[in-house]
Length: 69
Image (cartoon, rainbow, N blue to C red; front, side, top):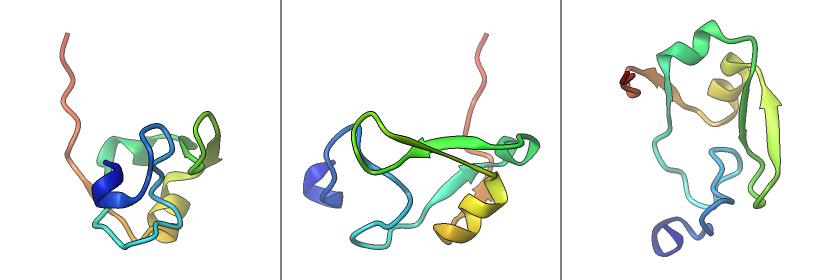
């Protein structure tokens, strides 16, 4: 992770990336009032509305998560 992104594990955030990477948010996030994402520092998170996160990190919604029971 660090070699590719410059971030350490646990501090990788879709916000304010050093290099722009394609970012995808699972489409089920749209159903939530807010989501928690890394603030870029290990142990720190940001609470943000999914559509605001989408705009802030120039992301796209996609069907990326799989539920298993």
